[in-house]
Image (tube, rainbow, N blue to C red; front, side, top):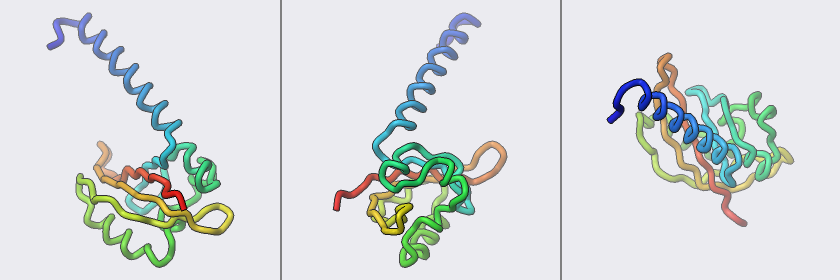
Length: 131
């Protein structure tokens, strides 16, 4: 339990260090990470998208999640996203579009939450499946 302003300041500094480490881990992870709007717009993504799919973070800001999912899987993804309500929707195999036009398979984990402004966002992690 914090004991006065000094302890609170120390805790705030420690939290900031942990948050920085978490961001660096996320940025350099060997798995796809993204935060997506409810409409599917990719808001934030890490460098693994370029490593596995050829899409730079700049490219991804012009894409929606729907444009990258294999067309035969879009309905299933839409159903899963509609069900999400602050909970993990499980694990799903999905094919995602590579910038060169072919598809790569990933195990996708997703969860949703509502930000302070009331906007619903989706947190997505994708592990590449070696083919």
